Image 1 (cartoon, rainbow, N blue to C red):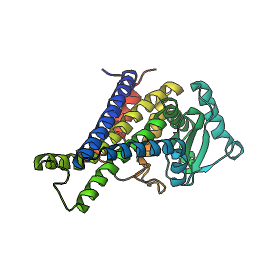
Image 2: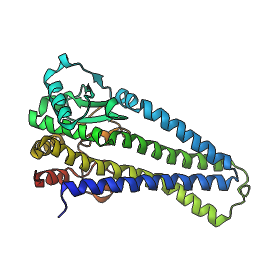
Image 3: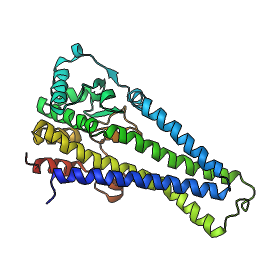
Image 4: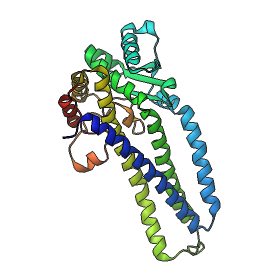
Length: 297
């Protein structure tokens, strides 16, 4: 029977497989578009644009996410108890103290962002601070610190960039084809064109599915690491249960940032339907809670 230890190892291996898949998908898209137009320059342009967007996202993605979430920084004197809790867990985990931000919203939730542990941020809602007991809050903070320690925050940024690039390449091709008056200009056979169009339609969908799958896998890994950090899995399990049962949606959350939160911020939409689970950014909360409660320290 798999444990959280083996699950963590499995998720790490699968994440690298997903990233390799993304790179292959992008290269295939670039090759097809450049072949259609017999213009290798298109592939080079896409490559350099991806580099520029990647560098920009690496340095500024956390600031963009914080602005989108309407998060505000707090100092130690604003909430000494929260700061002491984070400091103690950072000492245990061997991590530098992250900046702490809050979102003024009564819906309980939290997320972490930042390109590395030295430039990390933990964000909690005021509802989380109000509605959770200390051991539950400790479990949530440990979960988010695990994302930082496991470098999930950087991985999430990379995945967002790759998904965006796949979608932009597909959109570019379709817009260009609609403006083209000569379908034979590229010298591509009708069958190849049909296959290519089908691929370009499916590519963004596949990219989004992989993005969701990576996000779900990283949540299991952070749960495992958080439980090991606190040595009290029930604290995080109880917090997840309480957060998921709260029916108030988080107003600051968007489709672009939803996968960052510890629990799906769009409350009232959870279901076990296959398609909804397939496109969900989070694993079923029942599975996470069960795994934690089955975990033996």
